[in-house]
Length: 119
Image 1 (cartoon, rainbow, N blue to C red):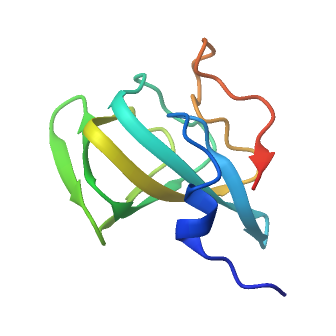
Image 2 (cartoon, helix red, strand yellow; image 1 turned 180 degrees about the vertical axis):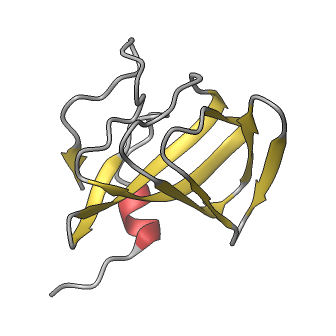
């Protein structure tokens, strides 16, 4: 059971909006992702998502409001809730999601990552 150092794992990639698997437990994936700019509006029919801000900040937009997410904050987006993360500058985020979670949820486009890389 090796420990995981988040700084080391984040240093292994530079692309934005491309989640990387860093762990797995009880049917959940632990992912790291770098945010910069706006993502796509989407929802997940069957999965809740947990977003934990490691560094930086971002805005989680919902259709009727938004929430600023700062370093050390986490937010759980319930299944079925449409959302869009937007980072004005680079932010590093850890995600906890079921293994079935597609990064773009109900939307398939150029940002969809079908097969996740492990780092």
